[in-house]
Image (tube, rainbow, N blue to C red):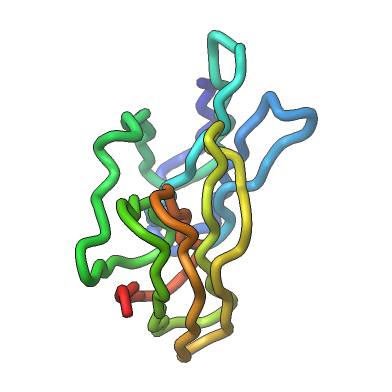
Length: 150
C-alpha cells in the first residue's frame, strides 16, 4: 500500500481511492472526505493487493474476512457502500435509499467478483429485486439505506 498525502486539509477536500492490480486502476471512491468505502476484493492467486489512496484527508484501510460480513435476518441498514450475506432460500428483497445518485444491490460471485444485479434505483426512492439463495451482496450507495426481506 502506498500513501500520497499533502498538507492537512479540511474534511471537505476531495479524495480518491483506486485499487490497482486488475489491469487498470479500479475507482473505489471519489468525493469529499472523510467517507467509508466497503469493497469486496475478487480472489486471485496474487500474494499482495495494491491500493493507491490519494487524499488530503485522514484515512485508514484494513482487510476483513468474508465470514465477518453481517447476515441479513429481516432488515439491515447503513450508509454508503457495504457487504452483507443472505443465508437461505431465494427471497424477494426491497431497498429504500435516501440520498443522491444511483444505488444498487449486486450479488457476488464465489470469487467475490461482481455478479448479477439484484436491483437498482436513483435518488430518494425504493426498488425491489430477487436474491437467488445464499449469497454475499454488495451495496452500492451514497446515502442512507435499508434492505428488507419480503
